[in-house]
Amino acid sequence: DHTRSIVIDPFVSATSNLTGLNAGKAKDVDFDYAGNVYVTGGGDGTSSYSLAKFNAAGVLQWTFNGTLTIPAWSYGPYYGGSVVDKTTGNIYLGQGFIYPAGFRVIRISTTGLYDNYITTPNANFTENWKMYWACNGGTPQILIAGGGINSSVNFGTFTPPSTIINSLNVTGLTGAGQDIVDLVIDPANNEMYTAYASLFLSPGINNKIYKNTAPYSAASVAWNVPSGYTSLSEAANRPYLGLSLVDNSANIFAVNASFLFYWDGKNLKAFNKATGAIAGTALSTANTALMQGGIIADACNNIYIGSTGGVIKVYHFNGNVFDDAAVPDIVVSGYAGSAVYDLAFDEFQKYLYASGDGFVASFDVSAYCNSNIYMLNIVPNCAAANATATVSPAPPAGSTVTYVLYIGNNQITSNTTGVFTGLMPITNYTIVATVNFSCSGVRTTSNF
Image 1: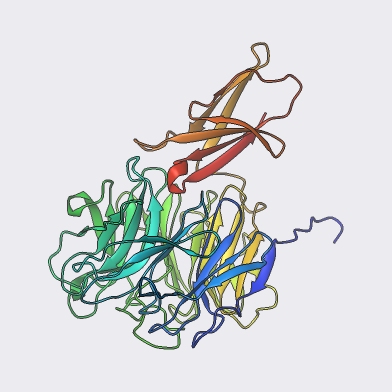
Image 2 (image 1 turned 60 degrees about the horizontal axis):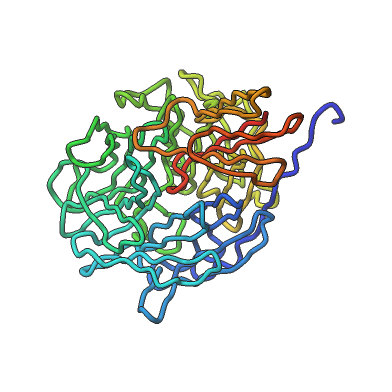
């Protein structure tokens, strides 16, 4: 159709390098600022679990098989959390369940090698299901969503180069087994949302959603509500894996300026962030819960969800209903029989990353929404040969903003004030601003 533009998506690549009982299954995806993409998957949940890096063109760079000899460490037991430092490309991997000693987190360099960073185990914090990098009031920290089979601990933090994991309880409830299966941080105010699965030890928290304000603690609970579903169940939240009862993580949360969104692979729901009340009408699909996952909400209230048949369903939420006809779905070419397991979104490049049964993929979704969480406002002064850049809305207290000035792809200078002097007339400049650069923050850009 010559009246319409064509978008060539960056890549769709096979993940056959992820070997084991769950061969090819890429269950979690992340990225760095250089456009590299990382997936974890494969393995069997007992002795092996892999990490792989693909470059921005989708070419496999290396695969880490999840095992170290010195020190003795394995990424296999019950899978585990992972997070990418978006500024450096280093990756942190944490074991899912180690009892009684407690899990340990290691760091893998951008070249795929263990770089001698390993945390000290915490015997009260034995489970690591998800990890997330956040600033938390200006102090870069890696957050751990997990649990303790012998304590009420469900949340932890550590700040490299320190190897100490600080553990705490963010619900205020007593009782062990309060496992966090997913968490998301609102980049506008650092508020945290968590979902729980606990089968025997703390059944009252099963399928609950909590909101905590920063700094996170039992005293910072803003509200808690039932999800309205019974989908989550302890250690059984990845039923597509080869062994049951081996993973208590799930990819179910997304947040934007307007709502908190929940997707358990079957049911899609929006929540009022201030109160926890249901927003609009929930949507229930014909899918089997938790057999697919991943959800992203952009600044235009387009909701991308990992679904069946190699499809990323896209809905527009207008505050009342999820409109399927408003925006087109995204098809993972060549994987019509595959489920999508996870999604990640680089708002700066407008790239949506997806992983699933046999693949990792990148899609240009710039046509869906041109808005960002933060807007970059630039006021140039040609007579004085300077320009001043500011970010709006104002970032959370304790945040830092790094401004980088470019001509084309060439970096000229950077600062944290947003004021650039000595500029040349009749020259096209670009400024890239990153809120909380040191803790893998949010980027936005503008030209002048």
